[in-house]
Length: 112
Length: 117
Image (tube, rainbow over the protein chains, first blue to last red):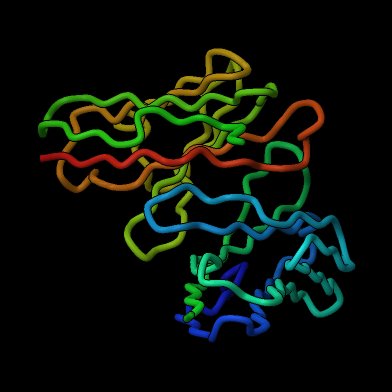
């Protein structure tokens, strides 16, 4: 079993829809959880950062972490065509020298 | 704005030559930087962890003599692809973990496209 599982998609939704992206993981030691957005041929851009369990909201984006289920989610409200990108979940055990473990990324297309 | 700068954004080189890619943290000190490569439609693959003032830690299967990493200061790490071959053509991305203020967050550079012909 891979440490982080993420459905690669592609996921296609109409403009204005609520998008739900998620990842599952197997390592209960993960404490830091992140979502990155990557446009084609660009480096990943940090969208959301969460420590331990709980919800975090930033504009149209909401990140949820459920450590008991080892499940994290990213919700995008009122999706826009500009949200079309690959979304990568990432996590790590601590804030030291441990690198992030990434999901494979989900390709999202928001159709106008 | 960008907090991690990567240069060059793209480079084309001849087979057998060496290419250096720079990764700079712009407004924070980065004790640790990570180098990844990414093939089209694939996820990021960690190549090595670069620690300031010490040798890099390479992931299994990554040739340390081919991918030379130097982290000489708290704001700069370089990746040199030596004796490049067409199979080294890929998207190389660095990321940095901050020392102050940004200590728990990793930011990525814009990436460098390498094409070896």
